[in-house]
Length: 398
Image 1 (cartoon, helix red, strand yellow):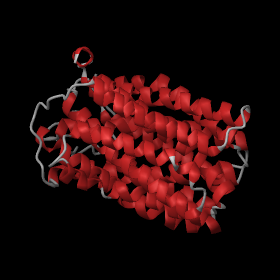
Image 2: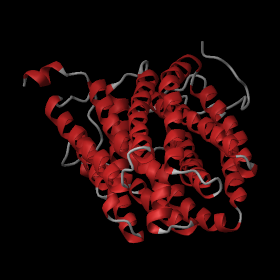
Image 3: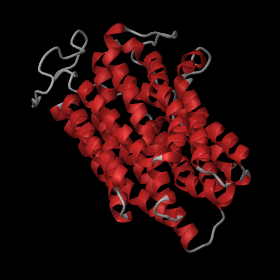
């Protein structure tokens, strides 16, 4: 009880949960393409199917609102971390097509429900003034955990000759242990506003829904096919991929809090616009890249832009009825994953015929996202959800 009284800051709980999830998921992610190709003989077809299956729990994230009828959000977050860890822990022991489908689904249920609830808790516990900064810190903490994970994978595969199964088991087991530790040392935090426990969609949130949908669509191009490009076209080893991920997260750990401050100062509209302009350039370059180090550089810039997506969440926080946050978090994750369920398997087939088309389609998605981002008001709030004029006017909120 004494320990619980000492650790009574919700931000610390959110950070520990983010670290636990990042440790497990980062090892799963960095090993996936090599494990799938070397151990399960995957082609673009199978990796597309696996990634589509992985997104099904995200598509069903709206069901979290029904779980919250019987479980507190904080408790459900810890359960989800443990489930994520368990799925990762057993991955290396089932090196086959259907074994990998099964463990991926188990991991994914924990992963997607965790981040649905984590987003909801962050928007409820942290005020709008500090939310971008805290989200930047959470992103940085996740990146620091990923750095440790990627470093261990690189060291284990390059110098210690570890087998896949022990890396998966160590990362997943540690996530379960951290979930138990968080349950033990943190009290149950109260919510400022009671949450509605039913599904809802509001017309005035339409721009948030649209931005969320397009974010999910274009993210799949990066998550599924950018990494696969590195292994299939340029022959990156596990150690190479781990090192690339390591560089990504070192940069993200340094810049994510700064991006949070940028959003606080200049607003969501400018941040999202910068993200999507960058993505148009990067995806177009992916389609034609022929040099491995250039592809790796594009991958790093692509990953850095992910931190800008904080702006979609803070935009919603500013326009939302506080009682809608938990329900809308589930609905938004479902919207985010509508395209994510379809794109990997569909584009996996396209990949077999023309990989450049996949990335050019991603550039097209970024163009649509940019048009939507220009509709975000300079000062979003309830009653001022969408900018009516001046689609391409750039103005600072400072």
